[in-house]
Image 1: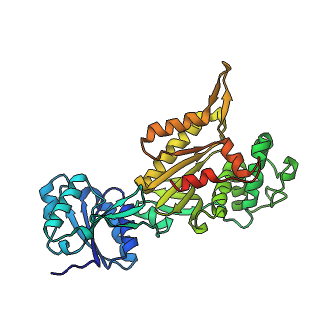
Image 2 (image 1 turned 45 degrees about the vertical axis):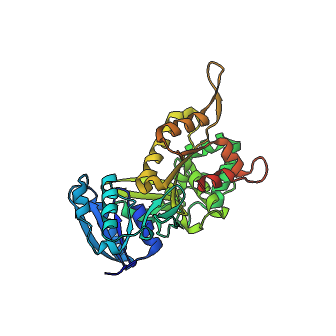
Length: 372
């Protein structure tokens, strides 16, 4: 038998993203999926993705992923001539399969693993290849068993990005007028100009079709923040515009949830939760942070990054002591995540920098996070 690098053996674990990345980067003719009974659904979703991309697949089920003998028995002489990526699966699966594959003719130049921290596919012979995430967000969600339902801010009569920028500056300078407008929306048609706002619509109420009015209502009650943050990233030049998604509804079995902002950049998935809750609602902001941590891990595992944007800063307590809510929440994130890259918390001062309230708009903090 001769070496055939057009075929690749991958070990499937609970996070399918590394498997997708390797295959998308190399585009082989055939993928052999080695997986356990516990990850059979993950393998099924990957198989569907590969086949839609025109890649043939073969399945090898390992009945007991904790049994090294069963893991080794899954490897054939033919597999020893193929590529092997041993990123996924349990440690027993990875080590046992790698050892047996090597015994059957596998060589270091054909064995690799995904190094998510450095964004490289590292080969056993010392070579490395940069990772590039080419799949779209809908494909990434589907291989995780999630069903994308649609994004916000698509109504022709709905809010525009420039409206979000107007609300951001107003919120950061005269917050009460924004809160008053949010309370009035729905009671009667409102004129944004009455609240010192020059928006793309002069009157918001029953003059609009229901879908557009619903979008404006949620926008004025706080969803403007996700549109503002998402559009800042789109227009920054840091990432491809089409890889920024805003207000995405996702279904998982019979329930659903929302992702405020999702960015695909390099080999990672960046998930941002946005809330206009202030220091007085610190505990709710904390819950928002925990939720985005879970959602990011759900769709990207160790390859995902999470962040919260909330108007938090320093406050003076009843005892006269100054408490830094932003620093406290960032510390909580670091302790809960226990990672080199814990979720990032952006506060009121970051928002003012982005809006350019003290000079030119400065997005350095966002850029550094998107490169982490």
